[in-house]
Image (cartoon, rainbow, N blue to C red; front, side, top):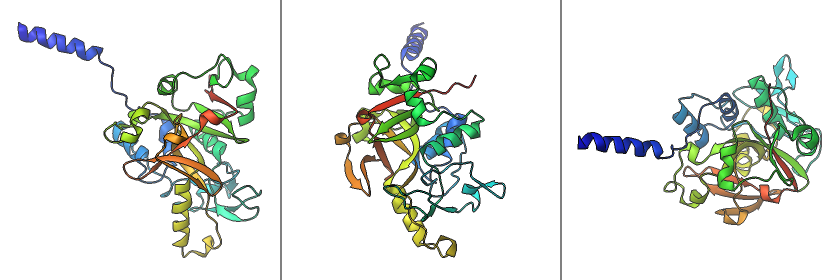
Length: 298
């Protein structure tokens, strides 16, 4: 009798305990994570935790290309995939802080090119231009703006934010005069990270993570190494990109990061995950305007 009573009490206590967070498989993440590099810890853990078998499309991940879109086609095929498993190249059509007009770079996405590609692969309608997502408040605020910089639409605490979001929600922010778009993909805890495994990140296990195509010094290094090793004359004179598809964390103060450095034209702050992968911070608190945007498909 006592054993039954004890078993009942333990069962009730178990029901009262919060369930451990764990990433759930979704079409959004299947598609988005395929643009990470082989061996990326979030891709590896996603497959292990969900039973998915998502493979990286490119060994080194999808690179950043200024103005890069998925729908540029040559001979009926998307330009980006013409030389799979290797990269294609393309001339940049405009000079920026990092890119030179008419110089050749490996072809990939820009930030909205990546999110539009994910939506296209899902069969979803394209999301609006970035400026409209932030500024056209009258049109989008009722059903699309989850949180924003506007009064009355403030975000909850950083460690609570992720509980209001679902994979595919977009963060659009204007920082240093430029707009950028990122896609929510979970939290460190969702991917099985613990305080013991990542002690420097222990206070931030429940902070929102985003997958996005933007500046990332790890890409600059590994793409240059890849280019240096090429013997195919197709890649002669091709320049290194300044980023690619990666996962970043939102809300952590730059000064709390283990590493901080100005690299090329960008200020980076980041932590290193156990395998050495940098987890960069995207500086949402410094934006002049932003919104968390949920596209409606019905």
